Length: 326
Image (cartoon, rainbow, N blue to C red):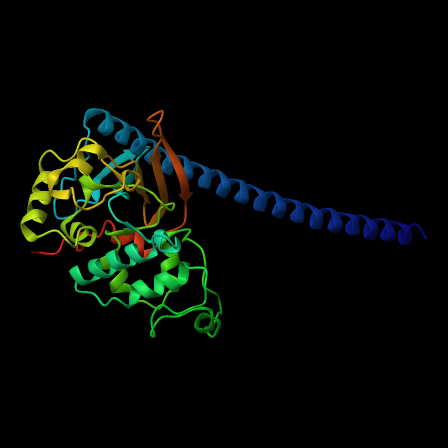
């Protein structure tokens, strides 16, 4: 009898031990998973702080440049939109920072403004011609952002076309939120790559920096100027530029262009910053849009994205994309 009782006690002890061991293993697995999650979160926070350090450097660089000179210049005249490229090491990790001027362009969002659509569309058509590109993309963008379902051209598309795709979607019928939205349109990637340095997505009615316009954009903005006057304008921009919008509007060569003060500026205040952190075989990214406050001169971020750069953003730092040869 006593031997039987001892056997029962031993069996119960073994069962308790098995339960405790199982619970211990589950607790250890949970702790291990929690530690892994915390480690990943801490690693992600560290990476983001390093990327934000790149943004802070870009903000400081812009403030210094804007205080030192009335005009920002690019070290590469064949890619004037690319203001700077810097690589530095932070805690043994290389960080690449590329600065892009985003206020020397044609604002695609102005196509959504019924009062400006015609003028902007004509500029984009001229720009497309200057770059030897098909102009179909202009009508596709126009129909994407306008608030109607009327086709601008026979080959353009509205909701009916996009609803038939897989997955289906509709036109925005509103200004573009981000340049990557253009990838939803049936336009060859090579067309977008060529266009990226010359078009941008800004709030509607944003002023354009005359001192940063490239020859293709000057021809798009000023089609009525003779070649001699265009050359004079290019020479003025390449040398002293314009110190004020009033000086631009009153310049004799442009006196008959009916320029509006609110459409122009002489110093860019919106910039795109592409930051790449190179950690071994892995890379992490931050795309920031910076803007200088007109009243305080402080540079502040308008938006941030930590996802991998879209191919259209990459086009802005692509060394193969340069001004067309005359």
